[in-house]
Image 1 (tube, rainbow, N blue to C red):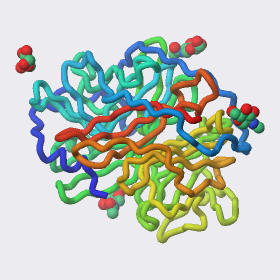
Image 2 (image 1 turned 60 degrees about the vertical axis):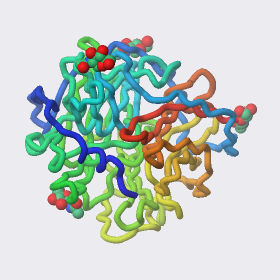
Image 3 (image 1 turned 45 degrees about the vertical axis):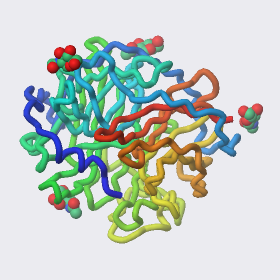
Image 4 (image 1 turned 120 degrees about the vertical axis):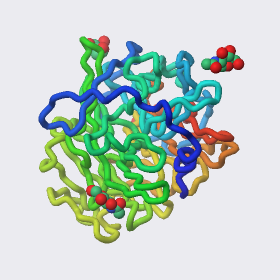
Length: 406
Ligand SMILES: *[C@@H]1O[C@H](CO)[C@@H](O)[C@H](O)[C@H]1NC(C)=O
Ligand SMILES: *[C@@H]1O[C@H](CO)[C@@H](O)[C@H](O)[C@H]1NC(C)=O
Ligand SMILES: *[C@@H]1O[C@H](CO)[C@@H](O)[C@H](O)[C@H]1NC(C)=O
Ligand SMILES: *[C@@H]1O[C@H](CO)[C@@H](O)[C@H](O)[C@H]1NC(C)=O
């Protein structure tokens, strides 16, 4: 599909973007690091009972009881009007953080600033469209730098309309301990408006300091999984019993139909030689990282007839199953679900439709993701917060909605 965000960037001027320099932290292992304050908005999440690795799915007809739209996600106290797309959320330090992709700010229809990713904090689980913008709000000292720092090589290219590096994410971040999470970003380099190279992905480690309420975002490598490998963690990810399962789409050879998975202990995410890679044809894990030089369909943990676009994966108590809630790449603005009795499947491939969200005047919606940490009064997964990127006449913004299963 043509990515709509490429269109937006041609039309804006960039006069006031990014006046403040990046704050660099002296960490020997970091290629880039930055710290900024997180607003004190607490949305603690009930600790769900840890699922077994193998479960017996229940309530799997996935009939919808209700779907309630909350509209544009925004910070009513931001002096600028914000447009943005993509993104995902997770819990850290009893807060719910949201990353977004290309984020632009306007004052009375006049362009003021843009950055390729930003971070906001949920105000309350009861009103999911209300956020406080932590990095795209000039009221905060960090305002209008990207939420994830550039390396020295990337920094000079920041936010120019034709030549720039961008870090974009379309799934949830992964909480690995009370005050630590990671998020995976696709790293693209725009050599010009018509020439883009996909470098792979980069893992950002997020450390929250409860005493100072500062979040430190660190990249230990410019590229974590380069474009010669699968981009583990970028399609979906989840933690089961202290192990992170990191899912990657084969975009090059399977046209987004095959999903491959790696696993690593959550306390060893930066120790890349401890990662293991799954081969579904033999049902075995090995330390040999596959070098995808052709389609490897039999090794894929999921292989669909319909291409995947975006989504998120998690354990649902209500379904006693692992769920993937996703948009396909068919640009039909439709949330779908697959489920499995274990992180390595077997995953269903009937592309069960959950709900089609209305399209805006700009065309199909994209970037659909579910956020399972919302609505934990009953069994988790019975009600889901979902969000997606909605294309209005000239601008794209994200909308949130509540989906309840029967
Ligand atoms: C399946 O779900 C139903 C409805 O939520 C519940 O009453 C039942 O106990 C569940 N069964 C199992 C085996 O978990
Ligand atoms: C989060 O909440 C738990 C439980 O109330 C508490 O023990 C912990 O100190 C809190 N952490 C932060 C960073 O607020
Ligand atoms: C923006 O527009 C409003 C309403 O028209 C006006 O009151 C305000 O002064 C304008 N702000 C700027 C900075 O131009
Ligand atoms: C793959 O990544 C490298 C940087 O590591 C970049 O130079 C190259 O252009 C990328 N290839 C493609 C096909 O995008």
